[in-house]
Length: 225
Length: 96
Image 1 (tube, rainbow over the protein chains, first blue to last red):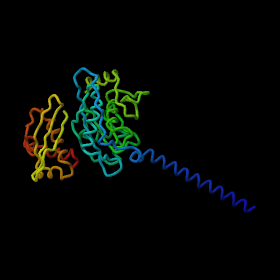
Image 2: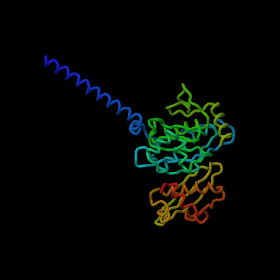
Image 3: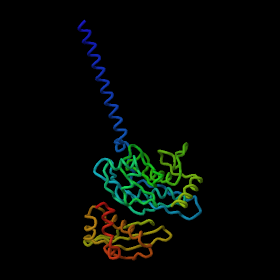
Image 4: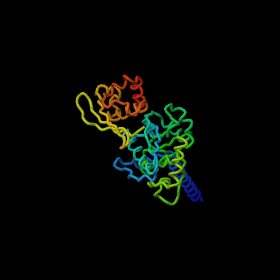
């Protein structure tokens, strides 16, 4: 009899240990997922050898320039961008080639290196208006591009209301494609489905714009910039 | 700002010589720019590449004047004669 009770207790304590282990594993996975730690290991930096192929302009009208204020958010922690100056220039140059098909040219107004803690960088994703309130170089006449190392698992994000975008160092698509895509959102374009060749398709390297998208993007530049 | 391309032409003990091209193909202007090593060290503490300093300097100039108004050949340290805020702005933008 006593022997049976011991065996039951042993089983129950084994079950508790397994449950505890399972909960701990779940918490670990949730932490890794929410922090974006995996972005550094599973995503890639875009090679300097990759260039956007030249696209024929589909517009017979004047080229419209858009100015970019680029902010490289640096720190020695986890989320600070490790991009070099040359990498920033390549990023914008290649994204600009994508937009050439719409007769839109991306021009760098300025590049700023800002020291920001991971906590502050996270604030940019959670509350961008509050973050930019503390960036005196923020220029709402331009598109403000914030570069960080990881973005909790996403390649880039656009904050349309404040004309700002964020792009990660580590991405699943080419970084310049991510930048061009986010700029598309600032210029009033939404996501498209079903055709991975399109710029506004999520999570692929497509760069094509439809005639309607070109008209809308140019109208936004003309009316709002 | 128009596209700015910096090409290193030569390097000596005293410094570097660069060609800087500003503008698209149809209306591109070329500049000859000199950067003394001593001045480079003063501005960057050697934490940035000389090309970056030259590129940033042109972004600075183009915010203040048309490309046609920029001297075709100059030494980078001359910029502060015309724009007293130049050195401080360069350091701030480079995060130094």
